[in-house]
Amino acid sequence: MGLARTLRYVPNREDLFKTHGGGFNAQKKAIDSVNEGEILVMEARGEKGTGTIGDILALRAQVRGAAAIITDGGVRDFSAVAAMDMPTYYANPHPAVLGRRHIPWDTDITIACGGTTVQPGDIIVADADGILVIPPALAAELADDSIAQEREETFITEMVQQGHSVDGLYPLNADWRARYENWEAGKANE
Image (cartoon, rainbow, N blue to C red; front, side, top):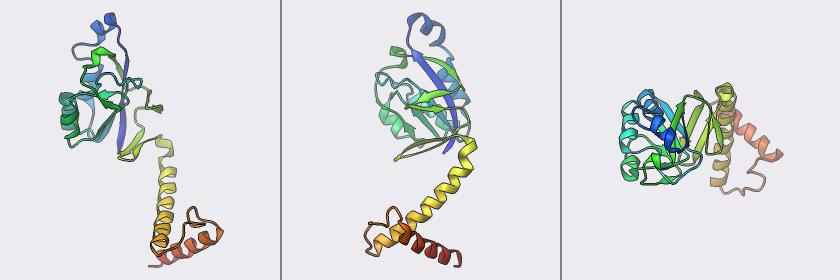
């Protein structure tokens, strides 16, 4: 989990790659400015035919304390990147350098990654099940809803472990809802 920092790539065009692709470009600036606990999210237009990050830049992000890297494009140096302590989420591995398809264009703007709008400062939660983008204004409400859902699922799991059918239990019907509320009240008194 961390706050989003964003990087946008545009489709490669030779004249623009000459002015924006080399040197200390937007990609390297984003990597070199990511802060402890932030997640670098890259818009690569879903283009998987080249890498958007490789082992050296991923290592730099890890050394700077990045919590993760997310791209809807490819990743180079797959084995080295996958072996890092910092997780990287990507569309697929690809050995080609980014200049084959991308120009690093700008940072810290609203982007689209994986079909989702991501703004700098959005809360990103990512694990093996997927990636969530949470606008900060919704975080408290979502946290409360998540805690309530987790409690219900703990109850449901206990009931299934006791041998109950999921019929009416998952999701809770009126009868099981009443039983859940009694169970929850009992837990609150413990």
